[in-house]
Each structure stands twice: as C-alpha cells, then as structure tokens.
Image (cartoon, rainbow, N blue to C red):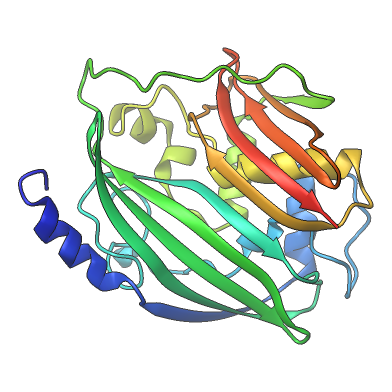
Length: 287
C-alpha cells in the first residue's frame, strides 16, 4: 500500500456514497440487559421509556453467519464498508445530534452512507480513515444523526516507537473509578453483537494482535462517560455529543471516568487510564 498510495486511495474512494438501510426495534429485554451491564439499578423498562443516549448501538448490527467472518471475528471486508487491506481497525470517534428520544417499542430505520475515505501516512505506516454517516428515524421522524470514524492501520513492528501519550486533565468536578474486567467486555460485546476477538479472546488479543490485554471497546468508554453524566444530571436532555479516542485501554487496568461543566449547557468529559494518560475526550451539549 505504501508504494501505490494514489491508486489505493482512488480504489477505496469508490466506496464513498455507498448506502445501506437497516431496520430494528427497541426491545425492553436489551435495554434491561444494558442497564445490568453498566451496573445500574434502573426500573424495568416499559413501552415508551426513553432509550438512554448511545444505547442505540445495540441495534442494527449485522448478523453475519460464521462462514462470513474474518479471522479477527469481524464480518469479512467489502460490502458496505470498503475492503481496507490493513489488519487493525478501531472506532476512533464520533459526533451525534439527538433530535428527539428513541423509545422502548419503537420501530427504527437507519439509513447509512459512506461519507468519506481518506488515506494518510503516520509513524506506523499507512492509515485509512472511513467516515460513516447514519440517520435514525422512528414514527416521529428523524431522531438521531450520527457520524462515526473508523481507522485502519498496520500492526506496529516490534520495537516501533509508540505514539506519545497526553496527560489527562485533573480538574474534574465528578469522577467514577471503574475496573473494566473480562465479564463487562464480554457482556458489552454480546449486547452489541460485536465479534471482534480483541475484546474477549485473550490469546488472540495478545498473541496475534500484540496487545498487552483485552481491549476495552471505544464505544463502551463513550457510553460510560455519558452514563457518568446521567448519574450527575439525571434530568438533563442531551442535544449533541462528540468523542475521540486517544489511547487504548485494557482490561484489569483501572479507568477513571471524569467530567466537569464547560460553560452554559455543556459538559467536558474524559477517561483517564491507570497511568494518568488521556484515553478518551468528549463534550456533551445539553438542552
């Protein structure tokens, strides 16, 4: 890929504009299961109960048969997402606008399209960034607009220099300390039907992909950050949320979820790893 960046970019950019439509229903059992996984004592969800923000990631996930999975547990590349020939992929961040709540019992439609594909070169070699835009509607119309960024890269060579970490802020107004253990990672993988083996298969994560442990899902960390905000401001109405992953987090390493008000009607949120480095940063705008 290094020798043909222009040709590869042109080939991958053919996926820009591709679309996909999926339908799903907000089931009460899934909502109750997510509350349990996040260690919440919420009342049993009833028809019409509002779906907490980011819990929609439990829905619309492709149910590919086993023979259509790659060696990493993800669906084989190609189809809707471009067939990027790089072994590592991660959900790097996203931006969401909440127009009105999704509710238990809603029948949903998600219309997705590939908004952009870009090839860049970093310290570890080529990087491919794919931006996907989703629009989710229910009976009341457009409920949620979302863009999420997926990054693909080579596995780092042994001894390759690591990306310099960034110190996390220490000025939080509230915080929650959490130990993301394999049970939490397994439950979140199951609820989001995420077969990526780096989240539950330790021999694969450490022996094949070279991680020091199981990787905590980026979307899970984002969900936990908004869960912290819900615990602090249970009646707040979320209008916009954006987040960016900065450093991977691994199981059995303490994680601190932090937040503080950021001007009128907004909160700054971040995740701090066990060494004090910034793992994720986010901002929530409230109505």
